[in-house]
Image (tube, rainbow, N blue to C red; front, side, top):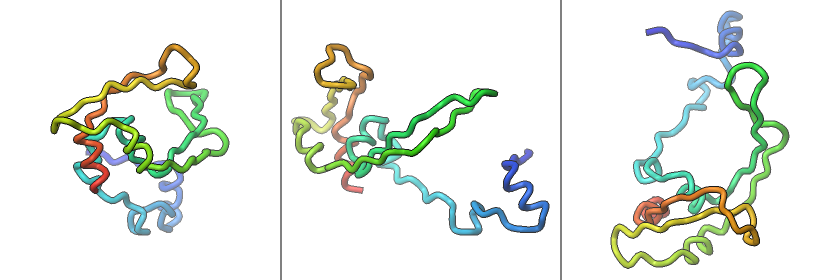
Length: 125
């Protein structure tokens, strides 16, 4: 099996230094708890304390994407959001949620199924 590293790390290793984003610099990611790992996109947004809004653009070559400009981070009131959702009457209640860009628009942009059991388990974590 062959390992791949980025150009920045490779050039730093060739010079005999340690890459600035190496795991040895305590920059490795912590394991994600199983309660949070099984959440879908909307369920994660419902319990997130901060919602980031980046402008994502396609790079000219290849199929990669990049963030262009500043990322706007909006704080979210998790307690208010979760309290506005219906209380689960059964253990496995599913909610159908349609996301609109603006409330006045008739159509919706995304359609998700939210499992309230997963949302509440994610909040406890």
